[in-house]
Image (cartoon, rainbow, N blue to C red):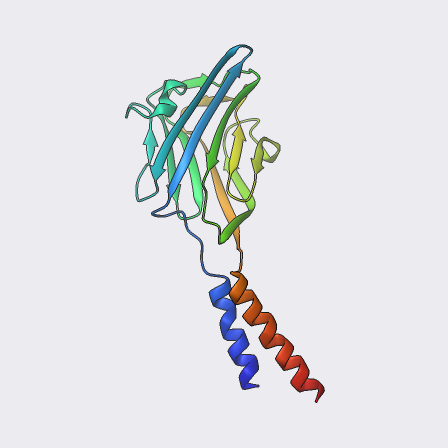
Length: 179
């Protein structure tokens, strides 16, 4: 029984809480209209408060020209806010946000929950990988107070040594039980 408790004590270390706080996230914006292509890149350190806002000289603002747009990151969420009177995202080949370098190698994104008041923005416009996320904004209209928030669900990737230790411990328990 003591060994079972020792193995169970390992589980919290395998599932440590992931957070974006204090990490550097790459924020890209891609706009492709036939031969015209604009790709931006901002590297932001996630902390308290809004990380990117147009009007602050961010590379992103070469495309998002209204000074009323911002991106705010928290421990496990990304929030876009628009405070202007209204605008639209061009309905072109590509018009999207892309976030990369999300989490480290010990954590992967396993799901994304979207909250928004932007008509037409739904889960079909969200694509994610282990450490990246894309939001397709083509043809969407935003008005005063428009926002989207992406709550990121993560899964820890156990270190090989920890996983081997856990499996070894479980194998020993099974062998003892059989005796």
